[in-house]
Amino acid sequence: MEFDYEKLVSATEGFSPSRLIGKGSHGYVYEGLLHEEDDHKRQRVVAIKTPSLLSSRSQPSSVITKTEQMKKLEDEISVMSSLPYNPHVLTFLGHAEKRLMVVEFMPNGSLHQLLHHVSSTPPPTWLKRIEIALKIARAVHFLHEQDILHRDIKSDNILFDSNWEPKLADFGLAVDLAEKKVPAPAGTIGYLDPCYTSPESLSAKTDVYSYGVVLLEIVSCRKAIDVSRSPASIVDWALPLIEEGKIGEICCGGGGGGGGGGSGVFMETNLRLLRMAARCVSSDVESRPSSGEIAAEMVACLTEPVRSLPLWVSFFRGVVKLKRRKKRLSERMTWPGQTCRVR
Ligand SMILES: Nc1ncnc2c1ncn2[C@@H]1O[C@H](COP(=O)(O)OP(=O)(O)OP(=O)(O)O)[C@@H](O)[C@H]1O
Image (cartoon, rainbow, N blue to C red; front, side, top):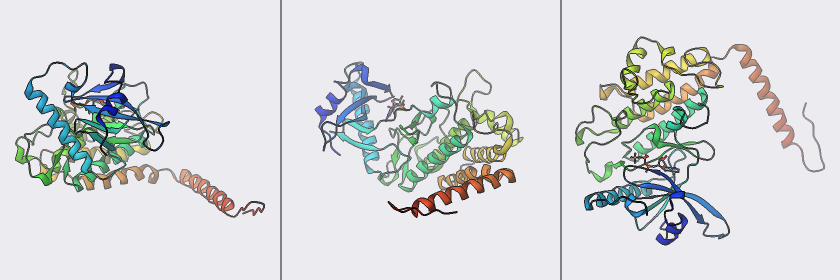
């Protein structure tokens, strides 16, 4: 959808600092209030991305930087607008003259903030973490099916919507393989595949590496790079521990999730998650799994804790399910003025 440029400017109160959400390497993101097309009384909160040079508080930039910033946003708009809707990918809403990009507003911050205690929210439970890992794996698989490589998968770029649904965001470095352009290697240190050393070495497995780092982050709550520890890299730290089977030393507790990471019903699951992460970050690029394989394994990981529950818990779940079925059936068999009891 094409938006009127001036409308977007006024939606951010002229790029007011009070509307600024955050600054990226090639632009600023603002919270905007837009009137609905069909009902002007209703307003919708959106996120509006601008090259930093367009905003009132921008630093003076060189001509090359300005051009580069505009080009990056244009490329991001081009990739995002070509994507069909996917529930695990940030929704693109439109643009104004390819200079402003409008996307859905994500009010609950990033996975990075959630895992590394930047926000006041407690760390997610184990089930929630596996769910996040599955949804992001599905997002990556979806992109790869569309011949799009993200190139900047990291916990900072996984944002939560108002229902705490995680979505993959920031397509500033994304590449459309159909365009047959091979850009210079780029990404974020700590997540960047060490085998991605030349434009030609870019492949879907480059994203798989970054996803593996995020998976390690999800399981351990450790940052991708933590200079206060040795080794600083999460990959260098975790790989030997996974090889030695010391999963308890990697997993960090999942508040309210039913047991710590290295023990209880989640032990088997976490071992699977870590083995998958180790395959993703393997230095043997060919042996890394595809994004489809990762998504399938995450589904298996999500059902694993339920399968390994003790017998009495399964019996109890069965009784609860039966009661729910009975209730649904009795509701279906009840019409106004007529009651039918199901025993
Ligand atoms: N749709 C959104 N809703 C809410 N906040 C957002 C949205 N998109 C981005 N942000 C926030 O705005 C800030 C800047 O985001 P942006 O994607 O431009 O850059 P980045 O990911 O921080 O950095 P870089 O582009 O250098 O990787 C980040 O803090 C991000 O969490």
